Image (cartoon, rainbow, N blue to C red; front, top):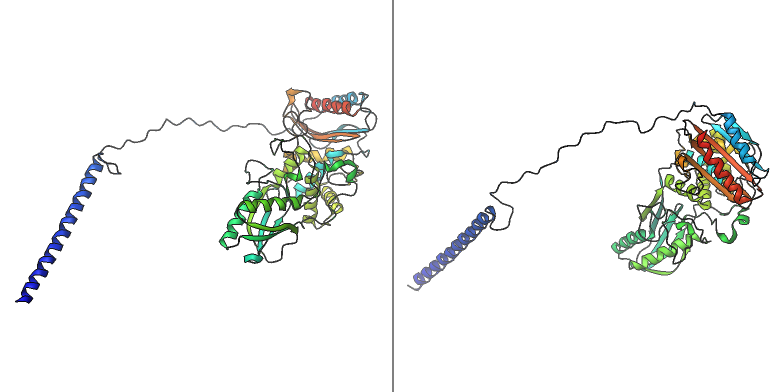
Length: 482
């Protein structure tokens, strides 16, 4: 009897449970259906709707402009009036500030000299020497490549060592990588952030920091550069890395990193300074750096845990020429020496430049290179050599990067304020040169009446340097009218 009662009790309990489940399911279904109906009728929010969906409307397409030629091909056959060219030289020579120690060459697009004054005399070129280095380097190096700066890890735990290794980027930024500028394209702040993240993944919070500055061998300074480099203002040692070229701006200096005209003192230890900046940034990202960074080559077999890339060599070349950066010019010579198997030294760099100019058929008679920038005492060349380098610039070839980097009088670079006739703005690309007893200029010109020309003018020992410089401005601006 008791067993039957217990059985009926269990049956009632099971029936009650099933009834509750059925009622709960029905309520849930009603809620779902109700919300769906509310959603479709737009009473409740959701993706369902019974309303018509408005089709997007688009404006009528604009008619396409037919392709057209923006500018015609340069007429390389258009002759230059030799008499008019010689008159420009005569007017220049008549300026008493110029003195007698000068050379001039005016050549057509084929390189034929149409007028000149002492074209084969050896003169001190100042920074026009950079055009030789630029042509040689850009003819050999991959100008679309970049310079990598990387962090390498050795060891683990408390014995971990990070190596900072550069490949020649002397325009590193101290903060985040800046895609809008050449100077600072690769930032040590970005490299530190990525390095810290890689270290954190390995559970490393404390490191010893070393830096590898072995891309360029000693000596780093050309032998006679000190004479024209007072207070280390115009040249510092070529290095595997540097922040802003080693420029030591004061706190109140504000400038576009790609556009400046003053010359702050340069650091004499640019690679060590870059390593110190990197150490500071690592600390900001939570990594303890033990002691001060020290120089040491990266051990073989290590791969970088983080890297940043410079601007392209073509962009750095343009920066070099427009700012007349002596250190970067020397560096391009050293990169060329390394690429061609020459000695990793200042002498190896000048040898490599001359060898490449010879291969290109540029006259190197009378060429003496004390360095690759023209800053060192003792360099000599002829106006013919300068003009022939510029004649290569008005041809399509592998060295286009060095032509694009020239200053545009009236617009950008060291010749920005040198144009005396604004009607020809944009028609000239030039490189200036200036030392205590030297003023010079070389470049190429799109002539107003058609055709092209190249030119070079070098004045040594003028009777008045400032006035001789103005005479060059007038001469240069008049060339477009030939």
